[in-house]
Length: 165
Image (cartoon, rainbow, N blue to C red; front, top):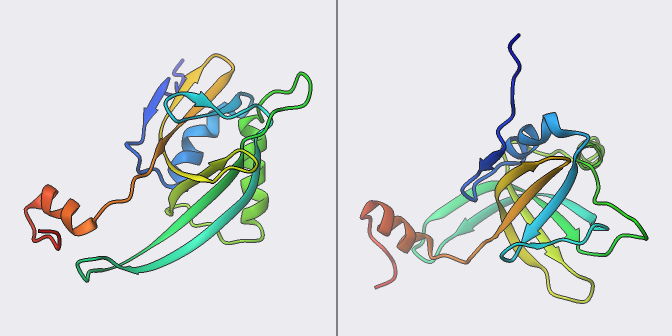
């Protein structure tokens, strides 16, 4: 008998699309979805997906280079659960996104961004760094997204010209 086993750990290198993230969760519907950020701090079990944004960005970077991309932003409020509360399941999370998708066009190829904060605190922006499958839970490790100078970054990667001297 051939059984398809899901990887115990998935590394997205901070570049997951909505579709890639949802696909990685697909076989784990009954597991709790735990979010970890800021060096392992876990979002409290009562976290709430407060908004799902489908964005289209057209930009011009500091080197005068145009760019355009689609992005799906999941805004999460980091709040405690009620007594004995557990984090939402992967199935509930996927149901929330399916409901949003029935009313707002979500591009599964869009870059996935997370905005997380506790009440009264500023939001922080994250990418999905990876997933760990452990027993009855899936932990999504959120990686902080720094600001970058795209021309300088491209120059470091390819030797192209940079606007920053």
